[in-house]
Image 1 (tube, rainbow, N blue to C red):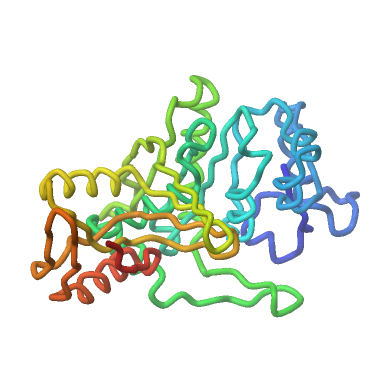
Image 2 (tube, helix red, strand yellow):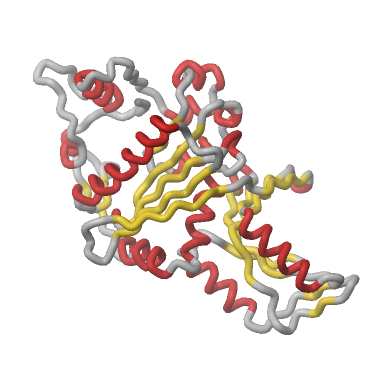
Length: 316
């Protein structure tokens, strides 16, 4: 367990942990979790009071903490931790796998993203895949949307930084139980030979989650030398769509508009999908000219349907 935060009074609204009466003041969350699991018989549990971002970017520290573990589970829902994980060199050399889990739409949707071996399908690829799915999966998009449209924040604790999104504990328990079952299966049976995106969407009764599992095959990765060097990651679905378009219009040049997410801090672009070229586009064996009829509307619709995660720019 890795966490650099202390267990505060307001945390009792979310945690089953309670410090012993003779415990230390302001106990570390990671140590409380470690002690609780040890009392349940997991004597091999270890705790680290440290910023996980430091561990993710320190090969020596990472090896000391992770050792021979088969899977690292990120349940922080932190964007800064996500960014640190995506650019982590130790994770690239890690024999095991990195998985990220979080809830969306006020707990009505949850996901578990397991990277592929050697990070052939990385966490940012899987997140792009999730929001590309939102473009065609109306139920998924609606559940995420209706839970985040009018999010309220409840301020608790000692200062203004102590805030939490209002969410029933029952939804947290429902999602975490399903995720825990899947992790347990992987640990017992072995990890799959590929990456995977598992998405649970609240059913119409509001009692359960309906799950879909998508296999994540390796992402096509390109590197540029211009502008200081960029990493461009193209999801397999987008690659296949481009290949189909090429075959359709061969021997003419062809093109379209790409939808993706830009991570400027680490110079990375993840291409999640595309929009077909407008009907007024011109194709010849030596040149492709992108048309304009309906293009802006299609791109804006793609951006909207991906809930703002996928952005657009035109390419030839």
